[in-house]
Image (cartoon, rainbow, N blue to C red; front, side, top):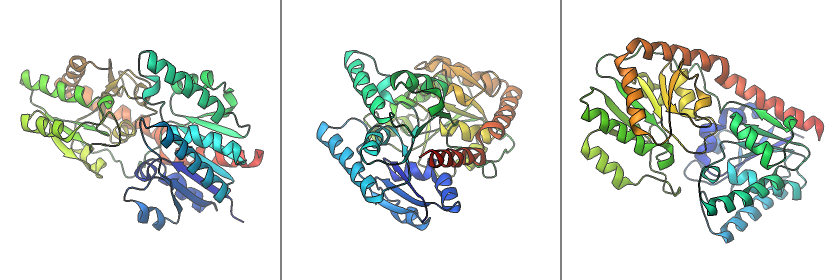
Length: 377
């Protein structure tokens, strides 16, 4: 009998963009791979890879209590039905609910991937404090299984989780992001002419979209010759989503070119001089910064957990404070005014990607983690 590996993730496109190479390698190594997820329009793509797909609606963001209870029971039913040997929980709600459900269903081995702690641990005020307390209790319950590994992407998340969930160090595995295929993301010469600054992300306020636009407006007022490209789609399922009306207003103003969703990120980054992510979201290790490094592009990002861990500050990119569009504009202009610095930072970024972010290394670490858990069950 093939061992069963079950991924639980809240939405199909996130699984395909962040976990697909791991699942394919698991197939190659003899696992029967199941994916339980919310379905957008990726069902056939998932099945074509040879995965068993189970539709699992899980609300994202803040939803009412009844829906959260329903999400938990759906996860529990899937676990009881499939009886996986290993369950790999991805993103916050699958980790919180799936970890508890896995204990009830006596799943032999659990991997909980923490792709950033989200807005709960970033928000301020008494309501946020109460929410953090409740979520911390859930983490302790969900990560309390003996045969479990928690994957963290940056040291801040690791330390926070070890504290709130009372996790011993031996249960934590550090894996820097979801990896990048270095044969697909190649280094191309920096483009000539007017510099291009690009931001590619989900269009959420806490990803720093407003700060990116404000920096573009400031450099336009300074008469700096530069093009700003914003790549991504609105995410209506998220309470922090940028609206289409806002995007239209920015495009009509002319400081930023809105490119919408694009799948050709290597091609776009090859046409850019600088990659920017001014995020203050609860990041793990932002994929766009890993892709920028692989493409040999200098980065400007925030001094924020996850973001600062994706670069070597002062060597492969520049750090700026969160929610500070002026500092962001100044850092971008510094790189525009110093093309040699921009190029050397891009070269350092590629070296960092080869050393730390290769998809081969990331996948291999996941496979070893599965095997260790199977041996201990």
